[in-house]
Amino acid sequence: MLVALFLSSAKAASAASLYAAVLLGAGAGDSDGEKQPVRKASGSAARSVRPAAQLPVPTRLVRVTNDSLAGQPFGPEPTVQELLQNGGIIVSRKPYRNLYEAGQVDTILLVRHQGNVFEFYRAPEKDLLRDAVVTNFAPAYGRRLRTRLATAHRPAPGSTDKVRIGDSERTNYVSVVYQSGRLSTVHVEPYVD
Image (tube, rainbow, N blue to C red; front, side, top):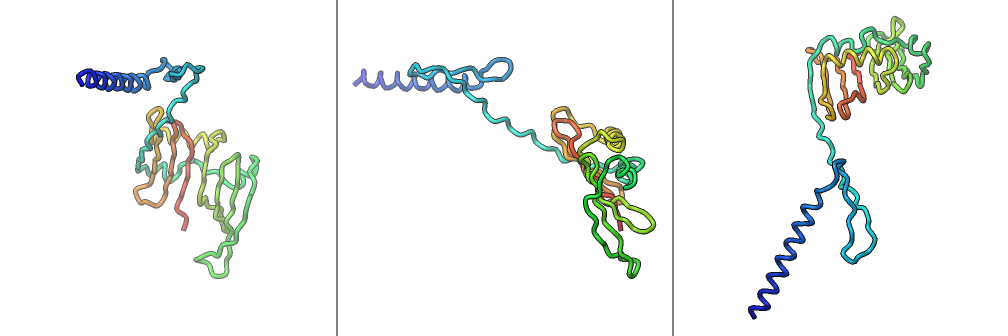
């Protein structure tokens, strides 16, 4: 009986030490963070263990009030004419009944330029920027936008931030997404009545 108890406790201790070795060895790897090849106990060929899925980086939500940036995020705002002269195309036109002038029908223009999308409210007197989504910062307006945003918010390297920049009257907004600390997408939402 004593021998049976000794054997069962030896098996338990052996199993516990094997379990601890597996747990400790699961986190071990080379300096690059890659897993080392593991051999099966049955003596079969070595196979590499895939690393566990990376945990997503938590997203920080940041709210900033900046009247100048929210009111004029591009500095000088791109116009329909400038965008068309530089390779932009009008992808849609929608009639829109003017709420203040009886019988007047204005137009909503959707302009695509180098991957960026702009929506303008076109009235007889002028075009008003109504919405813009910028993902390509190579054009001049994108570079100006990036420069102005750099002064408003600096994300931590490797972080994912969603920044909402508004003016103090809460009428104009600029929503910015930084992925891995780099500017990714800007959504400009100016107030148009």
